[in-house]
Length: 303
Ligand code: ASP
Image (cartoon, rainbow, N blue to C red; front, side, top):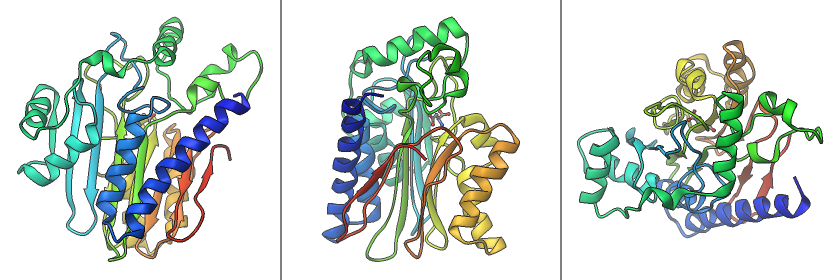
């Protein structure tokens, strides 16, 4: 990655974490902070969610998102949508204005329309970088994970630790507010070259997103199938609640032991009820940032 490109990512992350921080500084809720952070990540074409989402095998975009309120254990999710500008706003509307937790496809879009959520034509999500990424995946006949270098080493003549195209993943945010409430939000285009109709962990409560005031808020990114089989986000919470592990121990157990044992690659971001933060990943890199009220925002990419 060129220094310019790296700066672009760092600036975007800093701006977005700061936006969440400002909400919390002014007494806003964790739920509002994670919603706004993820909405901004969706708006930014650098990241694999909303505009800039990856392509399916068919050259379409199918987006998934979820949100969970740790205070009430309320949750909302949508999957397989292709006309919603900000999937996270639709997921939040599902949580707050429906009797259900999850909507898919056309039904999700009909619901979003009824909530006056902004709709777009599918070409809204298009970026050249993602389209080229699909073309390379089609040549490889593989499914590409954004932060994954393993499958790309062959085509990475410079021998960079991570292919420049592959570091932008699913987006997520977790937060704790002044009242001690936790929230988590996750949004994604999924995996490049995924089969049409495939849904990963991101919109599955407990797999790619989980929040519970008693324990932790978690948002995950990685090989979705393995995160679903590991019930990864909930497992962090369960290890804390039932096995008495600290956040760091629980997050590391899941990301560094349980997921690799079934070939799961990726990472997660988490904040616990005491405000401790964990950002473990077993992939080459993970774009991440932390903002505490009254302190400078920290962002990072590599290990
Ligand atoms: N977890 C996402 C999925 O499987 C992909 C990612 O995190 O990059 O859909």
